[in-house]
Amino acid sequence: MKDRITSLIVNLTEEFISGKISKEGLWEEIQRSVIPMILERVMRNERDIYLGEHPGEYANGYYSRRFYYKNTPMDIKVPRTRTSNFYPSAIPRYSRYLPEEYGEMIESLFLSSRSLEGLKMTLKRLGLPVSSEEIDNMAQSLADEYKEFTGRELSSDWLVVYIDAKEIEVKSGGKVKKMVIISGIGVNMEGKKEFLGSLVFEGKETLSCWREFLLDLKNRGVTRVLLFVTDDFSGLIKLIQGLFPLSMHQLCIVHLIRNAKLHLSKEEFVWFKERIEAIEKADDFDTAYTEFMEMVEKLKSKHPHFSKHLKTRAEAYVTFTKFPKEIRARIKSTNASENLHKELEKIRINSGGYFQSKKILYAKWFVFIKKLMSNRWKNPEPRFKGCLNKLHAMFYETFESEYEKS
Image 1 (cartoon, rainbow, N blue to C red):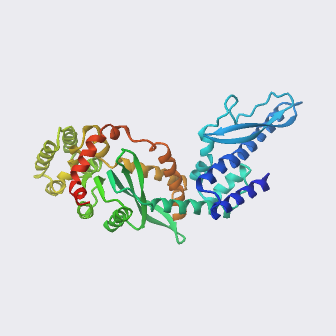
Image 2 (cartoon, rainbow, N blue to C red):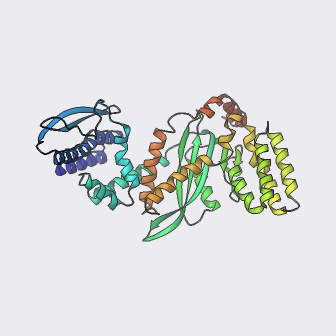
Image 3 (cartoon, one colour):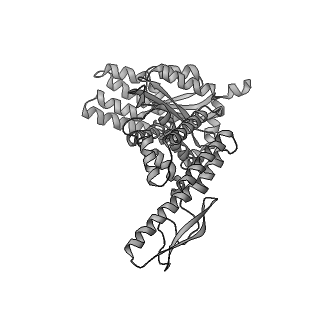
């Protein structure tokens, strides 16, 4: 069986590289052939345990049964015993359809493995004699696919673009180095989230990193963004204004509150949070802006530097109040992009605290992103979908001059 599995994997890899089968065809063949082999191995082990616990029972060959994962048929050899009292728990008894968890098993193994060597050992325990070279080729293929995906041409028009930067650790040149990853999420004109891409930079977060990321979006086709949502990184407001002069810009309210805690006393901080909460409930932008400036003015005497800082960014902190109330909670902070990076953090921890290489980072990140876009992000977000008419009106009003030129 081991030789048969090895031969199958080698043949599939060669056909994919030569272009005889597509990526979709490769994954379908894995579902159709490799997963059944794993299940058959598990079921045989189950039968061996059952026979050991039931003296007098004997193995009695196999019978074939067809199952389906989504629309992919799988012919599986189910082991049986002489009395037919045994039924393996690895497959459903009364259904012909396998749960989606079976199809996600291979990718989950890759995500949870701390190293390629660890993945190799796991697959061997499952009866899959895959070599380190084959696993490395799989990781390289995923990394290449990730680069192709994140370099794809993008739509020109977006309702919202969330961008976040995060420090990570990646092994490079034999050393674990500090790096920063900048990732973007877009809400398209249908109200659906899309992963726009990530760029990785060695060292700390700098304005030049942000410039490169934003220019990459422009080079890939992004020209009109109704609203950018970012944190308050120094120089970022002017940078976005320069590259996307008609776009609105919202600075993260959550970051603002965290920052205020560092500047204010406990009593002042409680008051500050109450004022922010009241501003968030304002009926319109003008009211929110006026209340924000009044708050800034009251901070001026005791906290002149913090007050000045807020004053120069006042409009960017309350831009979200220009939008329908239904989506304000979704656009007042970078939670969308930060939550994405929290998932990357989980992957980093599962990888042993750092990524073994940029290749492994890209491969694991791509596995997660693919699952995200095919599941949670498959449909438009209800709150955006519910006010698309208003958002489209805002969009076309904002970029009316550009449409007239074209």
